[in-house]
Length: 137
Ligand SMILES: [Zn+2]
Image (tube, rainbow, N blue to C red; front, side, top):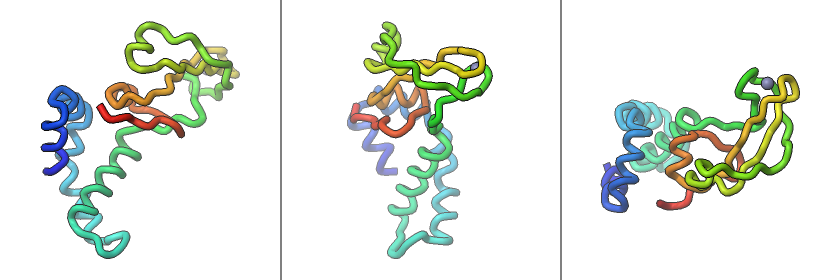
């Protein structure tokens, strides 16, 4: 598969991280491609289009979690934005130079939310909302 080779030649460590994080997609990809090719969403629609679409659908709907609104980690209740927080050392190391603080309206638990642009960190958190855009490694 072309993308596997690209990952390996660009950055072997990043490729390992990606494979460890999203390994299941490679096993399931052929089945997803077959389903898309049976009912192509547009024409012309070849294997390359099916592969890209299958991977992007898996990434968007299965791998990542859309977190808007941000829910309370303790009770899943609604939170309200409470301002920007000072990043911890761990958050800074993950590329979270901007960290939002959200406070639960029910139990007052704080939910910190890093605004990330680091692909490696996004592979760890697997969540985002409008604005998370991985930069190249
Ligand atoms: Zn709560």
